[in-house]
Image (cartoon, rainbow, N blue to C red; front, side, top):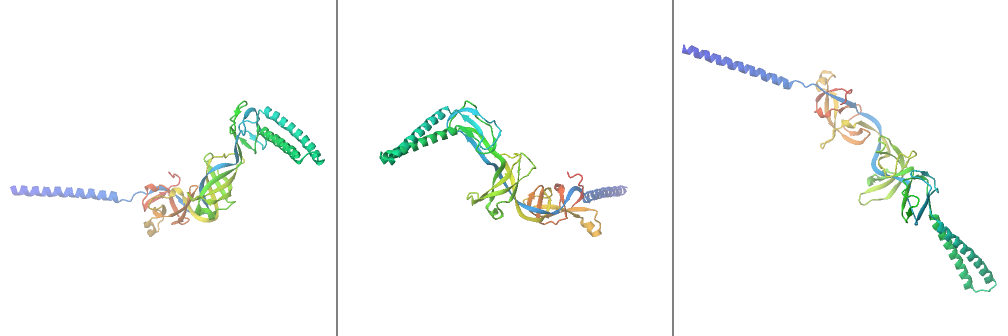
Length: 367
């Protein structure tokens, strides 16, 4: 009786162990199936690598300066009598801008001119006497010297009188006038700025190795932060014949037409020097490139390996490919090596990809 119970217990134990083992085996098989099941394809947006005519450019940064610009200042002291212009006014060359009180100078000039007349009369009288040998040569020379001194004094007073009137040295636009009638001006007192805005200069520096690619008349394009997206054209007018020994750069000047006066002197400008070597280049959107310390790469969309074997082109996968990059401009980047025109590259969604990840293209929602 005891033996029968022992055998029964042993059978029950083996049945329970076998059941637990079968359950555990089934559970492990289920987990393996979950982890080995193919992942659903990841949605990405893709763009086709295009071959376009690409014009190489040399990027640079510079500062705008006026073709003609000056800070108007007082050359001599005096009190402002009349202002003939207002701040911001467009003036012509030679137009009167400011007059100082000049009564004292005019009176002094009148006295000097009277002395000139008297000296001329005395000179003519002394010359006649010299011709009749009634006076010595020394007396005639004294009269001649007196005449020249009188004329010089009159010319000096005339110049001082002219400096009492400040005129525009060239046509342009006045800045803010800093003086008012009645103000006393000392020599060097700033009055206003005058800028010719019809055309501007932009000075910029380029590395010395670019010198063979530069020439006078070469076209440039620039942008300023005040007008984002708008490009202004110009051309190189001068190349400095000396390389800066400290920075190893070459100073270049370009002229920019500014008929609408959108650009102002002192503005910071980003510009490109257009090079004549236009060539066909393969380009992709800049968002398609993965930049890293190990090299730059793109994900190329290709048919899955299984589909290639079975002849089914329905499923796609992303293959990582390292590329060599060229210039970047306007959201595009040149691919020098590693990609052919016509191949599709992933433009957004790369962060979710690994090499060989199944993908599906959905350009309707690039985000």
